[in-house]
Image 1 (cartoon, rainbow, N blue to C red):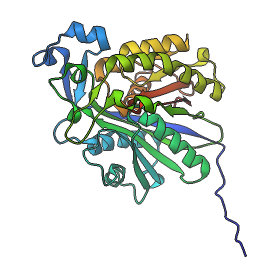
Image 2 (image 1 turned 180 degrees about the vertical axis):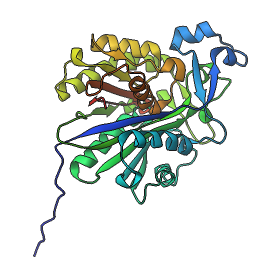
Image 3 (image 1 turned 120 degrees about the vertical axis):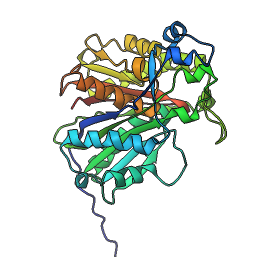
Image 4 (image 1 turned 60 degrees about the vertical axis):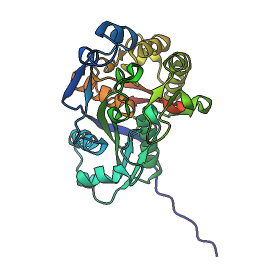
Length: 322
């Protein structure tokens, strides 16, 4: 006799309850970098748009950064640690490959026995994790999910290589995802270009990050805007209805190019990279959290999140701003 399996009742939709962020206290300016590598403030600003970036201390790894951001997101959500039953940590800069850093973050936040795993989609990691969290809640596999993007890119940088040391930085951002009577997180559009996997790469545990900047620039400025528009279409949102565009904070020139092609005439475009640098999988929640805190975007309005980077991986979705 075959027993029928029971499936948890699905929710109508999901939404982000709150964002949180954490930025290390140490600020490294372009002038400071110019003391050790052949560069200057004007050269850096003109190429990537960065004026300063945050670098974590020796006692701040991705767990410590993630705990700070996660605690802030939890406080903003109004939920208690006991309400969270899944923690997803998006990172590509882990100090070690195992065990799961998500489990330790959860433990330090007082979240008891949650599902917990790390996710690596590099700079698209937060969007991948957000989509995974949303799907878990809709399927009934989780009630409330803490999603964190936490990166310590500084430990994978050759500080004598001006093509990377001027760009990458450290930080963490987080979001709490819960069920909703109506959709607050739109369908994800994601994918990868594996034939270009070596354009941004850390070859082994003894290597630093390296990238082919021009190749990445060409790919991002041509391939990503159509993905962003597809995410809008699948969510039933017109570009002109967007209140914000939050691309991965890779390079200010890339951000501006994507925004122009999306043609979201009424949207505020995130430019957190200017003062935070490229924090890979942490950059989107860092930027979104700051925009909300400053009152740049209205609660309930649609925002387009667009992640892209090493892999080459990409993901985009429209959310309602908490």
